[in-house]
Image (cartoon, rainbow, N blue to C red; front, side, top):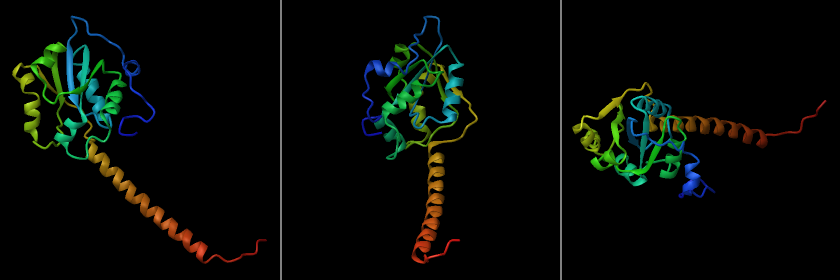
Length: 197
């Protein structure tokens, strides 16, 4: 993928809508809102979305901009750009609607706009530049209104853990490849004619 998203994929509203279930909340629906980076959508995040959906009837997921993710998580994040992350979330069967470029802070306006009854977050909080205070600020309005809920899920696999695994496997692969390359080079340097027969 290039800087603009999936290579060869030109996003239009119609194309993006093809990823969406095109659900609409009914007036009696209990709307649940969650937000996050959703970078490299992991099994724990999928389980979280399933459990968040169970808190109501209609699940709205806010996906933060690249700049917001970078501000709170640091220079190497996000790994995927906003378009890639939004399409990944849209493809999850528990998600009814995605806010592309959601604000960090869940505001009164956001709650009213989407008629949110529950704002949910997982019980595990990623490391951010400001620590837990960043999340206290982000969910202050929802907590004051008494509509904030934490959702437990079993998976603790995180992006940093996944990156560590990839790097460890890379080092093992490079060591294995280096050993094989040395054996091959040695073979060709000392190769002699052998009579077959």
